[in-house]
Length: 217
Image 1 (cartoon, rainbow, N blue to C red):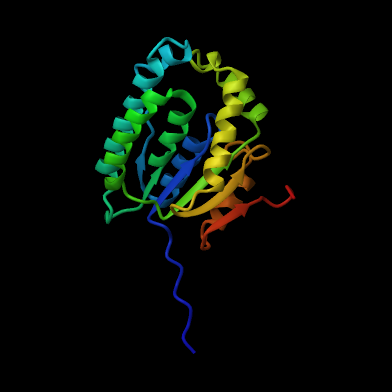
Image 2 (tube, one colour):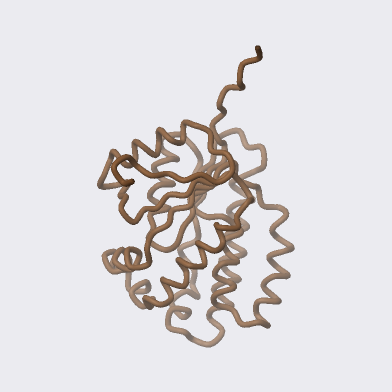
C-alpha cells in the first residue's frame, strides 16, 4: 500500500483582510517563525490623505499608485520559484476591491486596462489566510490606533470595505484559502490563539477551510 505524500508547507503565504484586521501583525509573526522573506503592502501613498478628504481625482491617483507599487513589490520579492519561503500581507487581486469601491466608470475602465496588463506577471500564493472581522470591531481598532488619516474614514466606508472583502473571498479560487474570523481573536494579546493557528498551519489547507480557536465555538 502506497503511503500518503508528506505534507509540504506552503512556500508563499499571503495574509489578507480589511483595514486594522491584523494582517501585517500576523504576516510578521509567520515570517519570523518560518524564516521567510516579507513582502510589505504599500503604506506611503502620497495621494491617500487627499483621498480620505474626498478631493476630486484623488481616488484614481491613489489607486494607480497602489497598483504600480504592489506589482513592483510582488514581482521583485516573489519570483515564481524562489529559494526561500515568502510571507506577504496583500494579494495583488485585492487592489480591485478598492478600485470598484472608489473609482467612477471612466476611471475604472482605464484602471482595468493597466491591471490586466500587469496581473499575468504576478506570482500566485500557495495559501491565502483571509482575516475577517465585524465592521464595528474594525472601527474600534481604527480609533484605537489613532492614526490621523485613518480617523477620517467614515464608519460607512469601513462597513463597505468589510462587505466587499467578504464578497471577494466568497468567490475566491486563486489559491488554497483559510478563513479566520478575528472579531474575538487577538494574536498579540492571546498567545493561545496564535499557537492554535500555527498548529493548524502545520496541516494541509485544501480549497476553502475555516479556522476557529478552541473555546470560540
